Amino acid sequence: MRIALVCHRFYPNIGGVEFHVKEIAERFVRSNEVAVFTLEDNKNMPSMETLNGIAITRYKPVRLSEAIRIPKLSLVNDIKAFEPDIVHVHNIHSLMPYFADKAAVKAKLLFTPHYIGGSLTRFRRILFQLYKPFLNGVINNAAKIICISDVERQMLLKDFVINESKITIIPNGVDEELSKVSQKRNDDERILSVGRLDLVHKKTDKLIKAFKLVANNSNGRLVLVGDGPDKGKILDLVRKLSLEERVILKSNLTRRELLNEYSRASVFVMASENETYSIAVAEALAAGLKVLIPNTSGLALFVHGGYAMGMDPPITPEKIAEGILNCIDKTGNNKIRSFRRYIPYTWDAVAAELEQLYHQVI
Image (cartoon, rainbow, N blue to C red; front, top):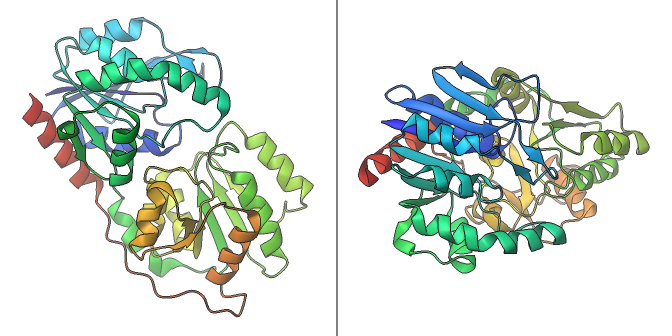
C-alpha cells in the first residue's frame, strides 16, 4: 500500500499526536510505502528528507497563532502526486483534516481526531464553531473514524454528525521496553511529568505551584520533560518560587533518555483535565510508577480501571500536592492503595490493527 500520513506536527516535535504518527509510520514502512506530510515552523529543518525509510515533507505554515497554522496549498497537490491508496489524517484541532480531505480524491480517507472535546479558550471555541461545518464534511467523506478511547467516541457522537458504524476504537500503544524499567528505580521521591509545556492545556503552572507546597515536606525533585510555547513563562515561575534547585526541565530527549527518566522516578503526575487518552500516562503505568491524574475526560478510564490515583475536579495546586504527598507517603494518611498492573497495547498491535483496517476499506 501507499500510505499518506497527514499531521499538524511530526518528529522531532514532541507531543502525543506527533509520537503516535511516528510510531505507526515506522511500523507501516516495513511492508508499505509511507509518506508523512506535516507543518514545521523551524526554518532549520529540511523541507524534505527520508527518515527510517519514511519520506517526510514539511511545509512552513502561515502562522496566525500557536494553534492556528495554515498550510501551503502545495500540500494538497503533493499528497495527490504521491498517489496514495490511503490518506490518514490526524488531529481535529488543526486545519490538516480539511486539506487532507481535498487531497484524498482517489484515495480512501481515514481520520483519527484525537478529540479533547472542543477548544480550551473562548477565542478558539469561536473559531472551532466556525470550522465545524467543514469538519462535518471531512467526517462524512471519511471511510473510517478511528478513536483512541470510548470517551473520545462519545464526545464525537455528541458534538458531530457521524454515522456511528464508521467509528473504530484502537487505543494508543506503549513501548514494550517500558515494562523492563521498573526494577532500575533508585530515587523514591523523584516526581515526573511528561508533556507539552503549555499553561492553557497542560496546566504546568499548577503542577509547579503544587510542588512548591510539596517541597516543604519532601526532599524530592520535580522533573518536567517536554517543550512548548510556554517554556519561558514556566522557567520564570520556577525562579519566582525559588525552585531552581528542585525543578528540572529537560527537552529534546532521545527515546533512551526518556526511558531512563521513567526508570528513575517513582511518581508520575499530570494536571491537564482534558485528555482523550494520554500516551505519557500509559507509559508511566507500564513502567510501574504511581500515577496521579485528574479523574476526568479520557484519564478517568485509568482511574476507574484501578490503575491510577484520581483527583476530582476542579484541579488545584493544593489537590495535586496532597496527592503527591500521599504517593510518596509523606502525609501519614496511608491513602495509597494497591493499584492494578496496567497491561497496555503495544505499538505493534496498533499498527497491525490499522493496516487491517486499511485493507478493509480498500
